[in-house]
Image (cartoon, helix red, strand yellow):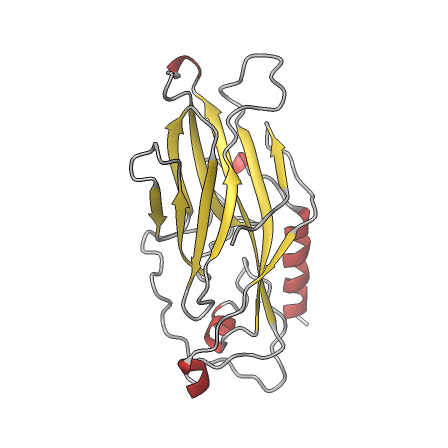
Length: 243
């Protein structure tokens, strides 16, 4: 089901402080829940702030009719932390004119880069680990190649940046998921309920074998937008954990 979001655009980085879109995803009760093998923590919500978007560079003299821009589409943590503890894989649906338009990225950072000439809507399907949610989340993002201000020639050094900020909320998380994201910098977790003890964790499926999955030192990180809502949310959560 498509989700709408607030979008922000800048040409030279900058910051964005916009109202966020909150998306609640609940896990369908299954046999493992009933048997107690994946118990749930009632009356608790886990929140994961994410950003998805595109960064597009004009190729200038290297541009051709079919390839005028190089662009990257991605899903990242709102503060550039690794999302691999929550997200299993991401499917990007490109325009049918691309070879293999359905692209699956199975480890963070969840991104892909392409070259092209036209703007189109990119489908982004986020799939979560089985103990997080058995539903996937469909998002839609418009690839923008050209700046709003077209008074002069397009720069090859300043990209067109389009990003959207969402907060994904998981009510009544499984005990395994809740335990795994304790003190995780990308996840907002409330204090543990009185008397709750963390279960012994099994390794999460499809862990990132490539190493780091965060985007803090990403080549495009200087162009990522800053969302003050995410900063405030994660700082508040960190303070609560230390009480």
